[in-house]
Picture (tube, rainbow, N blue to C red):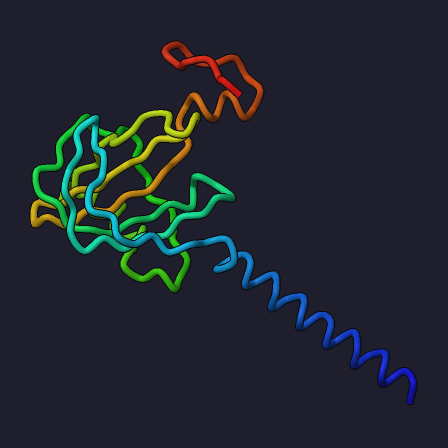
Length: 159
């Protein structure tokens, strides 16, 4: 009889631990970003409408945003690869955005370089005004975080 209580307690602990881990991985660190009226794209402030976003203090890579904007322009973001958003944030479909970028149905713009250090903010812009933003690690960040010498053109790390 005592073994049954011990086994039941272990199963309950495992279920509770698993549920807590799942919550922290998919929802716990994220905050909803609301009220965004404009985004900075290549040094220019662009008004936006219908902004939906998420972000987290735990990592610059958690930023995702969906919005509408006209007149987005800036340098091409070579190697733009949207990162998958949590399943509950359904306005951001990384696979579809990547396919559209590859097929030329959308354009990847380097919105901000090295902000924060080692990360670029990318905006995918569609001709109909839809736009999506995310951050991805850049070559300066890869080298700095791996402990390698910084590539040419990378500012020194200031941390």
